[in-house]
Length: 473
Image 1 (cartoon, rainbow, N blue to C red):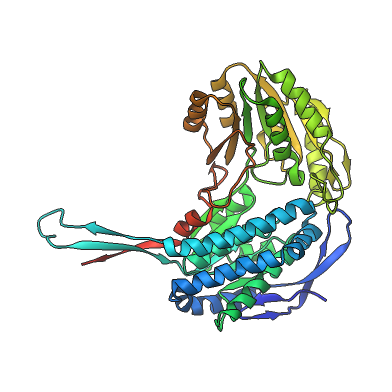
Image 2: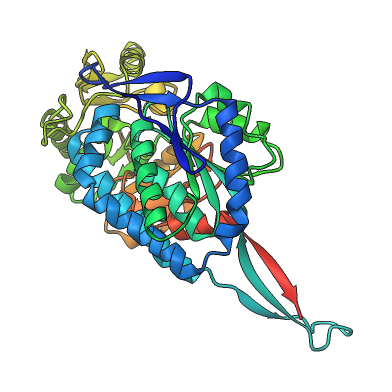
C-alpha cells in the first residue's frame, strides 16, 4: 500500500503514485502518493494560518516537542536506518550513524530554543535622543520551505525542521524524489509527538512533489524563506526565480585536502580513503582532490592504494560495506565516463574504475589534468585524485583553484601552516588532521563561491530563519 503524505493535519492520498526502487537490488521497496499544486496550496494555506499560533507557543512547549522527536528517532533508529538503506542504497552502517545524528540535531534544536537572545542598545547618541533605549529580539519568519536531498534524507531534513521549529516557524518539507519514504517516516514521528504534547495541529508538512512542479511554486508569497540543499545549478536557478523570499543555499563541492610533509601519513591515508569512499562518495564534502608534499608522496601513494583496495564495496546491507551503490545506474555511468575521460587525457588510474550496475569501485587517479571533470567538477562518486606539490602556498592555491568552496582538509602539526591555510583557503571550513568530509551537526556548515550563501548547524540556521526587530523606549 502506498504511503500517504502529511498535508494539513492529516495523511492523505492523491491521484498519483510513485514506486521507490532500491538502487542496489533494483527491487521496489515501497510506493508513495505524489502531491501537486492543489496539495501545495492546501498545505501552504494551512501552515500559514497557524504560523502565529505556533510562534506564540511557549519555549518550554517547543523544547518538549523537539526533545520528544529526538527521543522517538532514537527509539526507532533501526527502523529508520533500514528505510534509508532501502531507498537510497546507503550502507547500513552509515544509515545508523545518520539516525544518531538526527537524534542530536533535534536535541540541539531543543537546547537552542532557550538561547535565542536579544540585546539592549543605548540610543542617546545624539541630542534629542536622551533617555531612549532599544530592545532587539529575533522573531520567526513564518512559513519556511525546506528542500532536502537524498544523500542524507533524515538528518538534512532534521537540519531544516529542528531550527525552524526552535525559531518559532512552521515548515513545509519537499524531499528528494529518491528519499520520500524517509521524509514521510519523520513526518509521522513529528505528527505523533505534536499530538502527544496536546497540540491540535502539526507545524510540519511533508510534500512529495516533482521538482518541475515545485519549480513553479517557489515564488509563492506565502513562503518567507526557501532553505535548499542540493545541486548548485538547481539552487542558483531557484534563487533567480524566487520572489522576495530569503533564499538559503547549501550546495556542492569538490573538496581539496592537503597532506603536508610532517603529517601522520598512515592516519591521513586512512581518513582520506574513508572521506572519499564512504557511501560511494555521495556527499558534498567528500574528499575529491588530494595534494601531497613531494617528500611524503611515495609513502602516501602506497598507503592510499592499500586503503582503497581494502575498502569493502557492494552490498549496502552488509554491515562492513563502506562503498555501496550510487543513487542510480545513470550516475554510476556518468562517473565512469569521467574516469575514462581523465585517463584519455593523460591521468593514471591507479586502482578501481570498474562498474557493476550502480556500484562503482573505489577509484584513485594520479595526475589528472586540472580541466578533467574528476577534478574541476563535483564528481559525487567514490573517486579521489592525487598529485604532489613542492611549496605549501602552491598547494593552498591548488585547493582554491575551484569554483566551489565548501570545506577543505589539512593534515599537518605545523601551526604556521595551519594558520596560513585558515587565513587563505577560500572555503566555509578548514578541517585539521581530518578529511574534508568531517561534520559535527552543531558547527556552522556551508560554503562560499558556488557552494552556497549560508550556514547550517542548528544555532546558525536559527539566525537565518528569524529576523531582528527593535523596540525603542
